[in-house]
Image 1 (cartoon, helix red, strand yellow):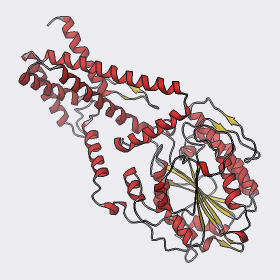
Image 2: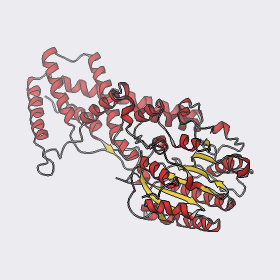
Image 3: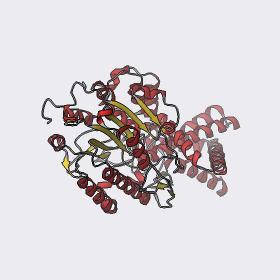
Image 4: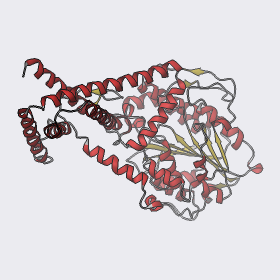
Length: 526
């Protein structure tokens, strides 16, 4: 074989191996070349050698089919190495793929048409280029395998590499140091996950056992009647805001402002950590886990939950005479499945009554959304209405953390927007400062309001902000003007102040039981 022929074969193998062995360029969506060997590619070459020996030269149609299959493997590889960087967990191609399409739709709505067209064109051209390169490389290797000597070498190499792979013993004998992480386990796991989605074997039993919801709400009662309860899911509010020194220092002035507002309004705050049901996204999993007391840790369980008749916090408050309100500025499309929760009033983006200009895709600033909730549901005298239990997932701290709204003196007055050009890290800090600052102003303006505000982070921010191997912990704050109620939370393990002490008390779904115990008037929680 000529030198040029040998170089072509080497280049072909290098190209295919690179496309199956790259790693994530932390943090973000980029990739990084890694000098590792793809075990699957070596096995694939041995199989290709057997095919050529049996059927002869590879046809053009077969080469195209193999190139398309190879493209699918490259996509799986990209998802496999990128998902942990963004979401802190292994990929689930079925559900993450659907979620990715929704995020793409969200992004596309905030882009101009030519940005969308350019992105689609670049994606198509990139896919075509990968198929062309893969097809050329496969054909080059197939032509080389016409030679019996090359086939024998390929088979011997595959056998030797298989022995290396099989001889590996964790922490004792590392015979895989030159291999990239294999794709086969990922493909197998995805097949299993897909089967669970398409053919759920155990039905509702998969959801497990939740709380009995047999407690009362007497600890919420005072001289003026039952207190209103607002359960605020703070978007992307993760423990990184406490644990990262730089981020914590950047947030210190806003935390102090919030502390002063609490003191001035006669309120106390106790805090804890819990483990979110998700990481970096899929907020609804944490919402569902807390509202039901079930471990809703993947979209399949969530879909199953919405078809069930499991009890919820919403129904629990309704049975005790509360008006239940779902205050959902982030929901922009019909959501019939949401009927599962049974809110007496369900207010999504079009039904909140917002009349200001759009602030990014999420449109409605959290400060304004809270002001609208207070005006429409919480401001009337207790003698004129029933107590309210409201669920309010915020949106202004959602990735990419920009553009950020201005902090307003009159949140229901004229609005302005502030477009930030900061990086995601700086944007995240700015978004949390906004969250603390608008909450402080709200508490100052409603000092005479007897209200319990439960602020729960729904998940950590994406891995590029939270950092490598970040925990799934999120802060929980319970704000109240009733010292007896805050003492009940302290008996459970909450600590005074805005910065919880100690490890996570448990998982997100366990917080449901603690809320029920703290609000119950029949026994001291423990």
